[in-house]
Structure formats: C-alpha cells, structure tokens
Length: 323
Image (cartoon, rainbow, N blue to C red):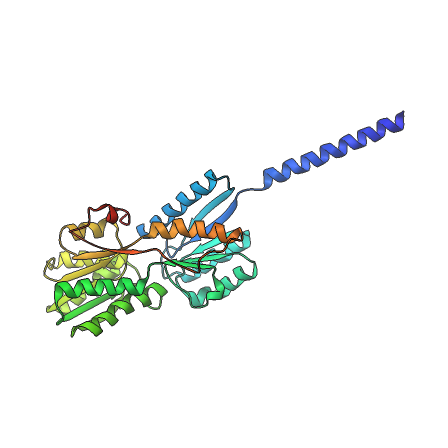
C-alpha cells in the first residue's frame, strides 16, 4: 500500500514538473523579431518606412502570427559603423529576419555574410548591394528610371542648353549611383547642357543649403538644378528661396515630405519625384516574414516612383506617396 502511494506521489510530482516546464517555456518564448534597420532614423523618409513596417506588423499579428518589429538607424547616413553594429546586434539576438537599407554595401558585407551563415533572411530596401548571394530579396525604386524621369522633366522646362547643377547626397551608395547616374546620363544624351557638380551633401540639409548657396553665387547664369534626395532637396529649396531665385531657376527635387510639397506649391520647385518609403517598409516586412517561413519570394520588387508637380499634387495618386 505504501509503495503504491509513493509511486502515485512520484508520478503526480513528475506530471506537475512537466506542466510547469511547459508553462514556463511558453511564457518565456517571446514574439519573433524582424529587425528593420535603415540609413538614419532622423528623416521623415525613413520614418515613413517605419510606418509601413508597423502596419505590416499589425496585419501579421491580426493573422495570428507572434511577431514583433524593431526599428533603428544611425544618427546620420554617414555613420556606417553604427549601422554595421546594429546589424551585428540583430544577428546576435537571433532575429527571425532583417530588413536593411544599406548605407555602405562594402562595409556591411562581412556582417551580411554572418547573417547568411546564421540562416537569417536579409531583405534589402532602397539601395542595392552587388553580391546577390547576401540577400533574399531587394525592394526599391528603379533609381535609374527615376533619375531619367527627373532629367526629362527638367529639360522640358529648362530647354537643352545652359548650365545644370547636380546636388547629390552620399557618393557610391546604390540609390545614388542609379539615380544621379541616370539623371546625368539622360542630360548628356539628350541635351547640350553643361553639368556643374555633382556636389555631395552627405544627406545633410544644412550642408546642402550651404552648397547650393555657393553654387548659385558662383553661377549666376545657372539655368537648372537637381536635388537628389530629401535632405538635399530641402536644403536646395531653402537656398533658392533665400537667394530670391524661386521661379528663375528650374529646380527639380526628390522625395515627398511636407517641405518639398510646399516648395512645389509655391513654385520654388517645378516638381519632385516621390518614392514610396511606406511600401518599402510594408512590403519589406511582409517579404521578410514569407522568406523566414520558407516561402519563395521575388528577388527584386519595384516599389514605384511618381513625378509630382502643381498639376497633380492634390491627386489621390500623389497623396498615396507623399508624407
């Protein structure tokens, strides 16, 4: 009788122990993390990427998936080592997938190899990297096409002779190579315009403002100017206004924040080419989840671009990409 009682106690204790282990295990298992790492967190463009990512997170959660989106970026696009460290930390945390807008593909290559070795899918957004083996999918604007679109709009307004200044951002970044390269190549092939620059603002608005101020002063006969990303175009627009050149220089910007929209409305800029950073974040996260779950995803996805002028700035199509 005593042996039976002892046996029953041991069995009961074992069952309780197993249940407690299962309970603790289920409680300790948190949501699976998708790390979204951008070039800088200090820009409305990248904050709109975050908005898209968070909306994707909400959809995935409503579909019953235990997922969490983290969002981070360096203080500035030029702080490449900070971005490398953020990717390294994400790998060390054992994230489910990484959505990355690379500032410097060469500097990031070793850490991307580490992610590959850890079997963590990497979804690249905005700027390309050359080694396709290091990422699962690439989502971005067709930057070459976008640059050509800006050049075509500029020539239609400014004509095909005179000087055009090119205000760029960070030399060698994938998006810059395609976008500014596409712009310059189109100008050279379709006009006799002399190109002044490019000048590199390091994606800093104040630097772009000062550079544009200098360019306008040094080239009083400047006919047109192109600002190739958000902070550069904003700085360019402010310099044009301060110099009293609004409407006197054909200016084209890139991206679609509120400052740039206002420059289009008041005539400082003829137009802006607006990407969809929201789509980059939203589709980036959805693609990352599919890849992490073993689904086949497209190697390249075009997130689109729209040229916006006074004529269409209030259209539904424009509002879908402006922020």
